Length: 262
Image (cartoon, rainbow, N blue to C red; front, side, top):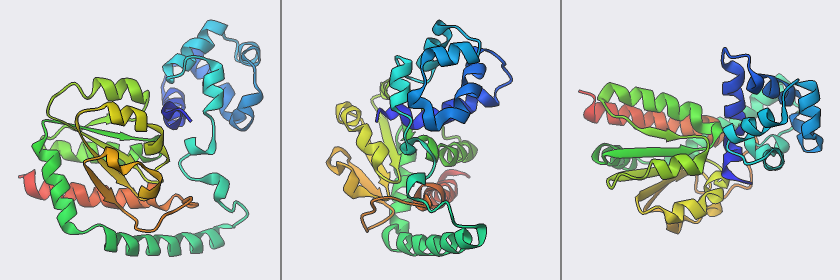
C-alpha cells in the first residue's frame, strides 16, 4: 500500500466538509457510498454519474496524491480506515461492544503504565523544545490527536509541523532545515513500514512512536517510544490508535506546557 493511501479518507473528508460544490465534491460524493466496490469502478462510471470530465477525475486523483484513478483504486483497503475493521465483530450490539471496549481500554492503560514512564515523556518534551523544527508524520487515523497536540503547543509558542497527506512530498519539503526532528507516529506499525524507504533517506534525527515495534525496522530511528511490549497482529478496536495515542500525547502536552508554557 502506498503511504498516500493512509491519508485518502482524510482528504476525501476535507473535500466533503468544504463549502465548495465543484467537481472534486461531486466525485467524492459519488465515490464514498461505493468505497467497498471501488476497484470494480471505471472512470466512465464516474464521468457519467457525477457529471464530470475525465480530466477532472485525473485532477481529483492528483490532489489526493495519486498519479491515476487506477493507483487510487489500489489503495482503498481496510488499512485506510481509522480502525482495523476487517478484524472487528460487527455483529456485537452496543452492550457487548461497550463491555469489550471498556475491558480493552483498561488493559491498554495497564500496559502503557508499564511501557511509558515519566522520564521518557520528559525526555521527548525536551527534544521537541530543543529542535528548531519538528515534523510529526502520521496516518489519517491519528491526525486528529496530533492536530490537537499541535494547537496546544501554540500556548508555549512552539510550532510543530504535521505531514498527514501526500506524505512523500510533504516529508521532503519538511526536512530541509538542518536542525530538524522527524517523529513518525504509527500505532500498528503498518504506516511506518510503508514509509521505510523514505525514512531511510532522511538525514534528520528520527524518532518512532508505536504500539507494535515488531512490525517496524526500528534501526532506522534514533529513538523509539513503544506504547506496548507485546506484539500485536491487529488492534480490532483501534485502541492504541484512537485511545492510546490520545493518552500519550495528552501526557506529552501536559509535560511540555509545564516545562515551557510559562
